[in-house]
Length: 229
Ligand SMILES: Cc1cc2nc3c(=O)[nH]c(=O)nc-3n(C[C@H](O)[C@H](O)[C@H](O)COP(=O)(O)O)c2cc1C
Image (tube, rainbow, N blue to C red; front, side, top):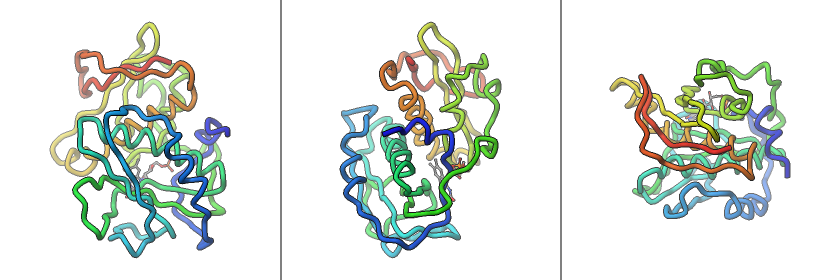
């Protein structure tokens, strides 16, 4: 299973076919995905579009509704786990898109976010088509090891991450927002951070470690953790 190559061709899929999907590979993959914090219980449901209130103009045949205990770092944990699934689905011809603009009709206090998915014939794109900040904008030093994180998807493409070099990897920072922006995208930014970390993990599966070390914030960004790769 080559998930790393998917990072360089993936895109948020918003055009789906109505084909039925065998959910077995998806259900088998999820418990095998690496978790960032094993102390946080999470779960998922596979729903159809009729079981959700969806505020996007496009719809997918299926949605994963993601739930988590609301312990500290639950968002980053969910982003980390389910981005691995998104790359896996892409590798077997299933497109997906994280969707913040949807809610489950059956209310649940542990509901966090959805991921639209389905068969698609519009799954990939050329590397040149990614719209992303440059490596020098997201790091103190240009470093090709950060390309997988640079290419990670994020809510409204906000790319809230910043990386500072350390001896064995990077200190990771998350953008601070003003009140208005915080309300709109702030709540998704922990998921974004988890997604970027999962791309670093997929690209460095043996070396990857993530740890919180109590480091100082930097201008415009809050310290988020330190990654070894
Ligand atoms: C947490 C999160 C929430 C998102 N919510 C939506 C959404 O509600 N509607 C939508 O069309 N795309 C949504 N997206 C997809 C982003 O717009 C997309 O990842 C970003 O623009 C970068 O494009 P790419 O994924 O094709 O690289 C979301 C992505 C993330 C990570």
